[in-house]
Image 1 (cartoon, each protein chain N blue to C red):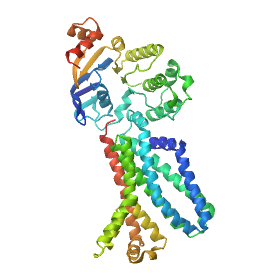
Image 2: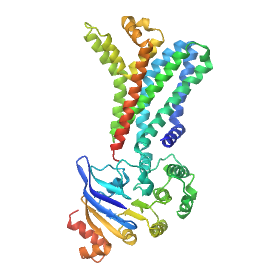
Image 3: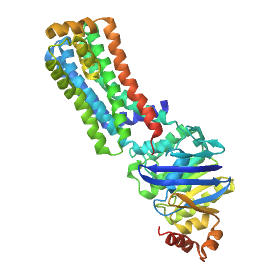
Image 4: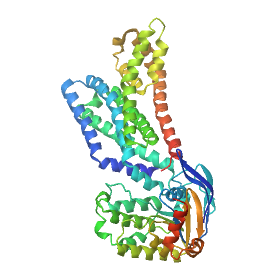
Amino acid sequence: MLKILRYSFFDLMRSRWSYVYFAFYLLLGIVLLFLNNDLSKAVITLMNVIIVLVPLIGTIFGVMYYYNSKEFTELLLAQPLKRSSIFLGQYLGVAISLSMSLIFGLGIPFIAYGLFKSNAIWDFSLLLITGTFLTLIFTALAFNIALTNENKIKGFGYAILLWLFLAIIYDGLFLMSLVLFEDYPLDKLSLVGTMLNPIDLSRTLILLKLDISALLGYTGAVFKKFFGTNFGLIISFIMLSIWVVLPVLRIVIKSKKKDF
Amino acid sequence: MVSIENLHKKFNKNVVLNGVDLNIKEGGIFAILGPNGSGKTTLIKSILGMVIPNKGTINVLGKNIKNSSSYRHKIDYLPQIANFPSNLKVKELIKMIKDLRGHTNEDQRLIERFTLEPFLDKKLGNLSGGTKQKVNLVLTFMFDSPLIILDEPTTGLDPISLIRLKALIQTEKTKGKTILITSHIMSFVEEVSDEIVFLLEGQIYFKGSISELKNKTNQPDFEHAIASILIENHA
């Protein structure tokens, strides 16, 4: 698996898109720091960008890589290699190279600005950790979609729909359900609802860490009581890990049964 | 060498293999023939484990191949259409396959045989179909495996490379290897193969030597013998 990972990783590292992605984050980091002149504020703005952009890039890149490397995959399938190691190797190659672009692209300007001397370092690390989790989750979901759909156009369509659903539509439905059932106690429900969507979960996790939960009123207090504690933090990370593990498991199972 | 029992495979509703029983003994050249869509490639891909059968068992070298991957160390496979990652150089691809399968020195000799030296630093995406097929042949023959599977090996080759390929196949045969070939070029099949397996509508229609086939169909030459099977069965 490590060999495949290495080939996929270097294959991607040589491609233009990794550099574009890296350069984008580098630029974003520099511009935000320049405009805000404040690390904490830059982290908040970054969060808003990352929460939406990382899943989008992860899905699109994952689907694109799978379809583009079809020939490579077929070549590998005839070699004495396990199917699970072929697909997991490719998946990790994509996910790790995307995560590296994110971590280095944002890390370099922030470190240059004096991240280590400020107290925003934990907030910033949390941002990068959730960003990496989101990359792992959405690349895995993208591989699932691509494995299930032979048709490229369909695959891309489903991938975009998935992103749209989790990043935007889910929130809308969630909000509507809160308005509809406002007469009932909804603390638990909204907690669960947040947990079930990795994008919402990451957003809440960072927002509450940034100590701006006071702006969220009563719900904010409930959330703070849960996510603010170590217990909440651990549960959240467990949820994010489950979001990684389940799609990865499905990649393994699905790839074992597929015809090429 | 390879034994297949009651193999069934369908893609959605399209039945491709419908109860194939086949025994291929060690040593010799076997040609798998059949009209378009008769399941030749599916049969080969099942042996390679790229297609998962719905029913039936396949044994390669006495071992069931289900859920196994290490048996592919014993197989050299030449895919039908040489689809390679287009941004890799020829040299890099050969190195990569060596890295994945183990060390070999045969590649140098094969590169010379097919005069591929001028293309080693070129990207695979920029090669012509015939040159890609030569690279494909190098990748297949550079390992010394007892079973060789060639899916349409003659595609795109110029006459001189074709002669070299035939010579190569004969040398491998004298080493006692088992070689499976599919091809639509009947003269090529007639020239190289010891025994033929004829697939029709997902089943083995005929297995035996070329002269047996000529007798069975009462035809003087091989090409007409094949054609007469096809006409009889309205395929």
